[in-house]
Length: 149
Image (cartoon, rainbow, N blue to C red; front, side):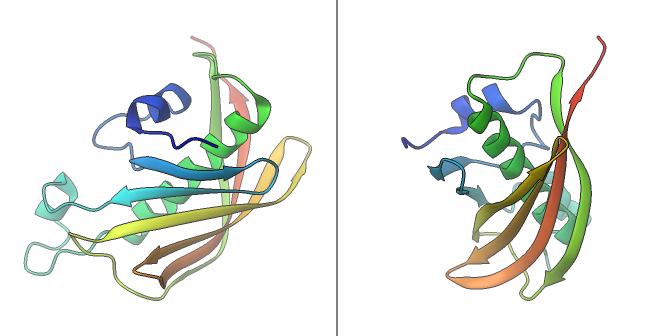
């Protein structure tokens, strides 16, 4: 699979700055896994409050980057781009563990592995690594949702 840059990613996700947390998709194995990158920069607005004296990328945003990666995977599996009314929503996080802090200057590598789909709910095993070291792992559940505009 070709890599997806941010201009392609925004065709799959409704998120925009400052909440678009995926900068590039580096690999997608159909039916299996997707690997994405989040470049963590000191210029992100979150660091003005978390924490100014020792900036740490929040764990909830790492989990959100994982969920966004899962949504990209699901849309690519189904073929084509989503409509304006179609979203994949985060419906569950299980077994989340944080092992190492993510700080400005880090490149977070997110890998999501499809575990199963059932009744419209997709379950993934997800990891976030920096320099090959595990920072976060979790089981992520997403579900397709049609919204009324």
